[in-house]
Image (cartoon, rainbow, N blue to C red; front, side):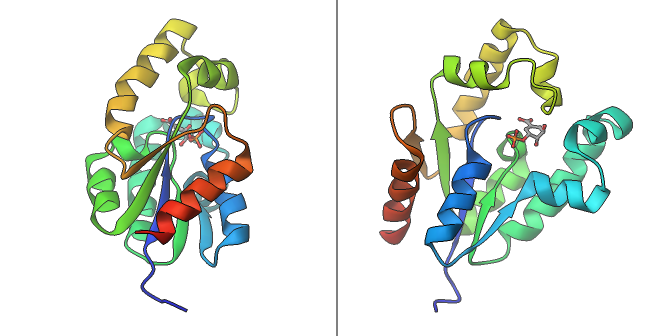
Length: 171
Ligand code: S3P
């Protein structure tokens, strides 16, 4: 077992499948899966939308930064970031240092369909379709700094997992 294997970091919008793909990937590769949103929920005992409601976004972002940086500094993990994680300068910098990152990219319309008015997603819940589209376009510029971009639109989940595995094996 190579103890120094780099982390796989999954990046992308809400609804891009980071958690699902991360979990599936962890079934086929000997790395532990960490879903940052789930760790935050466990630590606070609150669902993400309740954290936003009760403690505010700034509180969430602070905790997200602290927890994400801790895992990014470890090894042998598959880490799915929250959709806003990579926008944080420290998280982005650390991700690009010693991890292999993958942006799960979809058509804007697909993401909008998936997250529009989603009660689980406080950030998307309050935006109309146009505002969501603007957010996706703005964020895509930053997501594109990931090491690899996976165009997921016409791929099955297994195909996405395999692409990531192949790219990871070569790097
Ligand atoms: C957020 C995405 C969410 C969660 C929080 C904020 C964002 O994660 O971290 O609601 O800013 O895009 P998912 O991408 O897993 O939905």
